[in-house]
Length: 324
Image 1: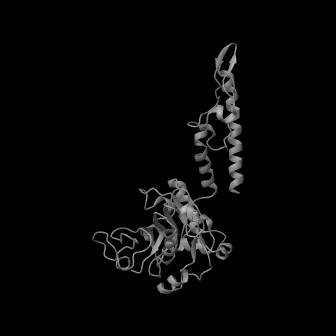
Image 2: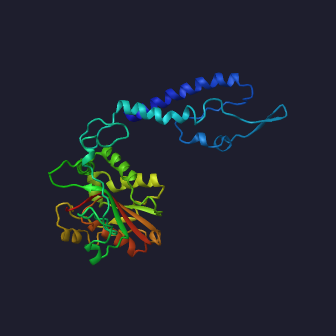
Image 3: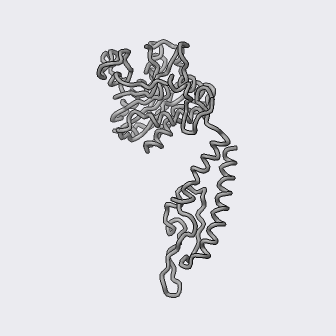
């Protein structure tokens, strides 16, 4: 339905542009040619006519005259097409809260009732794994786990808390569960936008983003890789290449959600491998996942990437489960 509305809107606007361009061309005496630029072709207005249409200047009455476009420029009517289209879609498909599904503003993802329960992770936290400390004062420093056994990644960060239990509402946790287990891709799109907006390593230049892979059996059951969807939006926003085929899950593992921490490490041990080691040599890698729980999965992925020659490996997740 959305594709039909988008097509219909483009058709109406293209017709309106054509009707307006003809009188403008008749009134303008210096215009020698009229070229209708399709609205639906992205960025065509930014390209030169000579390169786009393979036409150049031509001589008329021994005078060199330039070819011009009659109509509106991209800064005028055409520049407002995405905004008009977004307004039409917002009217037909209003934005809803990612958690409770109440109506919200087009740029909002959580309603006023759910937003206070979405807790962003802030200092003080571990300089390496990013775990927030229970005491809300003091500088950032290494936690006891990273001091005892340094992880194979350089640092890991997450945007918000992944809440568990039933004491308070859990809008972000519920949204992630709807995304992963109920296959709600519209919720996943909102979560990916939040991940790109609250990206923790905005000052770092990465060569490639690698999403945590799923085994083929899990991928067939779910239909998509949630980490890849998050990675694509982050990569598009930050202009970083995304390579979903660089890391592979070699064997199927039991779900990590119900396992204790020690069994989680054993569950994913040796489950990941780098498909093409040459593509990872001396690369600055950003590893992306949806939730950081015990860190067993991202540790194993980072270990495989570092072993094959990655220069650095950083980890970013949308949320993090914390015991306190």
